[in-house]
Image (tube, rainbow, N blue to C red; front, side, top):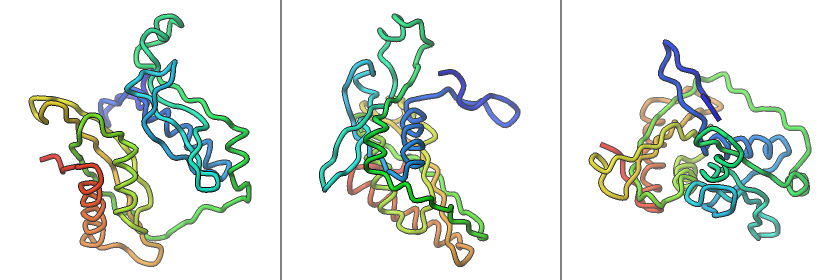
Length: 204
């Protein structure tokens, strides 16, 4: 809860939100050598429309091992928590079972990163996790990381039942400095696949 990024001369800051709760769970899992999947969920005490199931794949089967998102307003009132408080829970025994505890040294590149931001407009019921998955696959091997940094819904600007999701895409090659054209091509491929998979369109 509270400010995830403080306001200052660098910007207005932002409050913690459901995406931070999901990323917290992913961070814990990554430390154990496991990769979490996410999909839309509904499970108390989370808000029905702002809850994600956290999954792992075991023998080809997807299993739910936790939840993350924004807590239900009634829960916040009962516990005396701030508005829009978010939380995550994770079955650590399950994470340990599927994780690879072999220490992994981080890959370090001496070449600069190329950052490309995209704002995509999708139907309000499309999970951000589905958009991110399409972007990851479409971007290909040059994608180093992806981060959702803004969610915006304004019916007058976007249309009824639509929302805008803004992502920061970081591209890097291990053997060379990427050109602007290479980074842009990877971004365009990511956006194209998101369009095919979830009907995403670049926000004008």
